[in-house]
Length: 97
Image 1 (cartoon, rainbow, N blue to C red):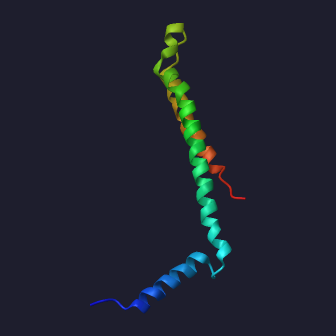
Image 2: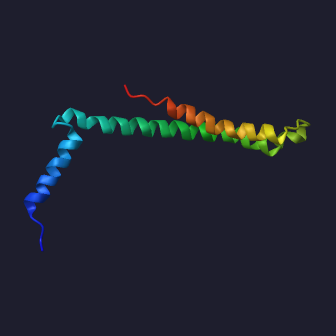
Image 3: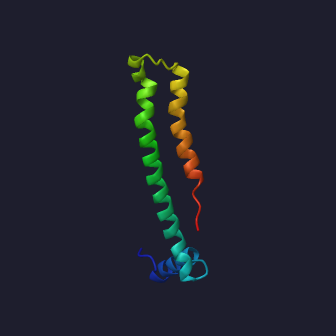
């Protein structure tokens, strides 16, 4: 049995009403702005994590041993965990204007 078109239209209208929040078209820009802010923050986190890990992974792996600088494994683990902390702190700084 074919569904009734008026029921579908009513469902779409109710959904659009919820999305637009009382049919105010200016509220539709909020999710777009929020999505752009999240995307910018994702790019920042990617750059921060990649930049930090480029220097921290060799230190944690013991590359500095050739120069006579020996880092304990615990310190290497701390260096690697700092990447996660930096990304988490940066993500918490997400605010909308």
